[in-house]
Length: 219
Length: 125
Image (tube, rainbow over the protein chains, first blue to last red):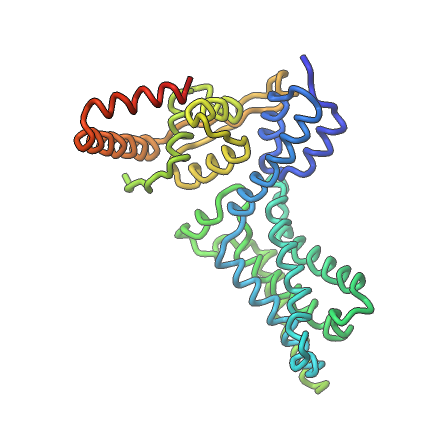
């Protein structure tokens, strides 16, 4: 019986979210007729699977809260450190660019999260990766008018990282269940919080207060 | 039992496929059955996954992973079955389709409905 070439199967399998990789790769393996058709089959199936996974792992309300928190973080940093950014023609777009990159990273990080990984720090990996990619984008855009001043970027990213991490500890992204089930649950979020998560949230709040105090003092 | 959501046409087709496949309802077989039912429209495997996820979220179907098999490269199947809510929704959809058909037959007459039936036969074959 003909089977797909292992390297191609592994490579394309990597693009399928881990939560449904097993059954989707199995179905595609069973349908295998020729390698070009197999590749086409995988490439036409992945967008659907990914969209479905994003729909299941993303709660619209939490997503909106994250968007507001991210943009507010960079906006607050700019208003405290560099007022010119707020009046600049491209200012709001420049502030929205790193926020948008972090938001998109969170979306895909949740979709590609492995349900078997049950670490309590898992909700923090997405924001950390997002902020890292936002910095990378600033490096790529160096020399253009789209970058943020370094201090605004440092303060905005720190605030964004802390606030979004706290938000995600309070409203953990759904991994095994559709997000709306999580919202319909009558169990309050307080019960979902472990001791470690509560400690991290408390430390994060203290750090935020300190950062805001220090930034206020500078001005 | 909660009142089921109304079903879209494609959801009805997917649920009919699951119902008719019974214990053997998983991605590949559901796709094959849906293609038969939806002729002459072409249906992608990805569209089946999206619909199955949505139906599962609505509580119409449930799924579980079977044991891995060699013909799938040692991978498991995700099998599906209709839940009570899904059966109820499908029954309501079928009843609505029947009422529509009766109304059409009443307006156009039995000869027209027979001609329509012949047309469907040609489309499928």
